[in-house]
Image (cartoon, rainbow, N blue to C red):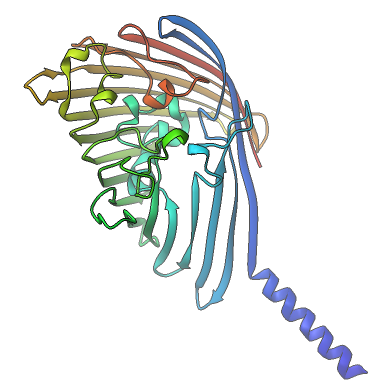
Length: 389
């Protein structure tokens, strides 16, 4: 009897230890606010909008200790609209992230599934939109994907461990079709942090984005397209630096986006002049300055300015060179460790061309936020609340 009780006790201990070595976490963010837009297709717009600063989401992530510093990991993340309860990106149940893989404390992680690219992982955290400001502060039309407008399907990703503050990684996303090179993606990036200084650089290439539903950047038809652009190729590279001194953080980021033969109907939304016709190329150079000051542990104020120089080249020799000036300001106050309230605004003006102003294609296609302006200026203000669990 004593031996039986001993065996049962040992089994209970082993079961408890095994349970302690595995974990599954439920988490989420609910971000909701009231927006005012000065010019949305010619009129003022007041709207409730979900997930502008941080996409509203819930998710599951887990880890299992396999021994020797190796773990099995997974993450499933759903995006949703608080206003109507609908699914987020393209009506996908886990449209934000869905992956499984292995993690080594010594070498890094290797994961498989729907994931972020290296621009989002390494460079975006140095921008205002990819760190504290959110979608309203994204570069025009989120042309460089630093606001993660699209994720990569069919992706294999490696992210290194930290070696003295240096991390690096890369992602390859398959086309999942017999046309191997059509709608595939490759990205690489690196980041280095020492003291208050953080520097990063990243590169992304997508062949034929939005070409079909099975590729790296999918077009799901009536459910929507993952990417901002349809083109023969989208290539983005950039670098940036942040420096924190006491309560202040200053940052500078440069990105370059090159679209080869972008879809003509898309450019029609960037300019009211349909006579420009089909494009052979569309390029964006984005220069961002940002600053944040943490007045108290519960209160900060952040600001940004982005200058974007765009170049359109038509197949028949037409050209246009709009210049975007974008200013953003935000103040955030934490009511608790999990709940904060904030106010933010952005103003954008397009010069040197008759192009329509707008805070981004995602704004133009989202009736919760705004349509493109009917002139070359647009102002958007938001008051919001965010809760994390």
